[in-house]
Image 1: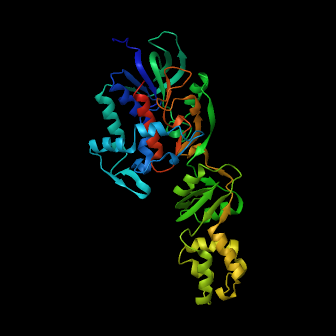
Image 2 (image 1 turned 135 degrees about the horizontal axis):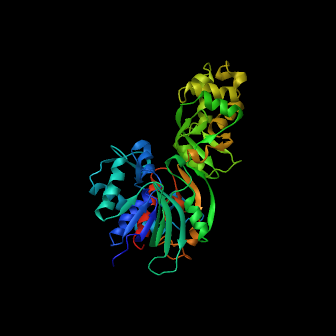
Length: 406
């Protein structure tokens, strides 16, 4: 069927991970596909991922690695397009990658390798991509062949396009400097698709008062700890910053934290600290507790916790500590209870929790149940992955699922 120049089978809003994968999947089926990107460049979040190396996927993918009001929603897409499917494409393109901790896969050279692969796949099947596009309006029209009309401007030139199928792959509110916005939510509301409350995810914590001062003094120090909040636990590196706490373990637990919640930190997750201290009292009674702990922790950190938990015994030998006091200190080290004042918010959040309510979306196709021809994929949906390549996995899987049918 010959199309007018302003008519497309599929228009995809957003040239990020999910949008690009959806685009070439649809175009392989002979669909005329256009991708509209508001930024000056495509794939900005891909390029910054993993410190420029792109943690593009994980070897171990389970539904438990994803957070959603409907935990079952992600299963169909993850089955339809698995980590092995994406890895096969990466290998086919000769991209060298390496496995790091917890099955995370990174490019050996540059995140550009992944973006260039996606753009090459799009080019091979004739996908058009336009950048610097500011969407002004989306309208549903009654004509069967062109269900949606889009008004937008490109470099301040007004344009109007029509399409049979519209895919919202606009991302979400996280890191607005990379193009994050809430426009996908606006489109959902326009067509009566419900939203789940949004908040920043995979984001550092901030503190006030004494804890903020401690974090400032320890800024730059990293150590492996266990962290727990609301029965969720992770063991990974923690990083002290001049604002508070960051590092992989804090980003992970931030997805489960709400204002007012306590976070429990185990500074020595591999040790039975109470038994160790009681034994040391018997065997090294003349030692200072600070000296003993400095075998396992940075001296700067030991100084800070000494001021918190045993300042009155700072110069006393271990033999002067009561067993009860040592057990108390051990308990504090293994269960340091802190209460963040806030997160750093969307400015530094890697993802947005919540989003388009999956109850109104087909888990097989990503199409809005009550609005034919309207699809939502990627981060705009209420599906958020853990740190470690899982959010890219959701982008690939949801983009593919939609690309098969749009």
